[in-house]
Length: 236
Image 1 (cartoon, rainbow, N blue to C red):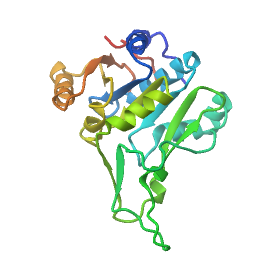
Image 2: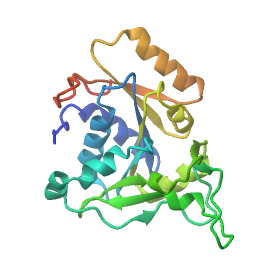
Image 3: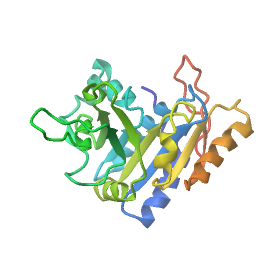
Image 4: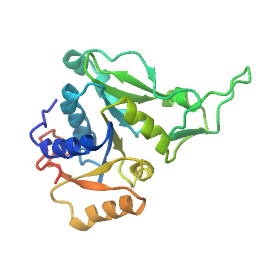
């Protein structure tokens, strides 16, 4: 796995400035298009900040049906490097407002409703201060779907639990979910390739800011689609 700490040092300083003003920070990463390396950047930043954290770094994956980060940290190679994933821990308490909803709601044979919170868990990565989300899409029944919604209360609760929460959002042409969570984040980092037209980057920025989100800057990622080279330029 690549060490991107030098390339992400600019974003580290931005985070530290935000952390001075509040107890917990929520940042979101989103790409201009598929293949930008959004997950690579989000994961690298989470790993970089974990040793500095006392309360933990939470890495949320909004690609609920793929769980890229959970799958990566579950691999034998990753577990040899970082340790095995810990047991599932619920990410919300009973009755707590959530940013996701399962529709239609599942009713068990005994008549009890399956609460939305049971579909999403957090796992600790080895003995590190890094936790990765896992959405149990395998529990969804036919015709059930996941819907995202703004939830200021949920993210305020998360800020009391973790020093830094990182949201990895799919590109907008695949899902509009990143626009929903952006409004509750403290800032959004756009990931693009150096050759991407400026207008394409600005369009993503306008969509985010049009929904009330705040764009902090752009990471220009020079990673080839089939490679894993470092980020060329950190957040500006």
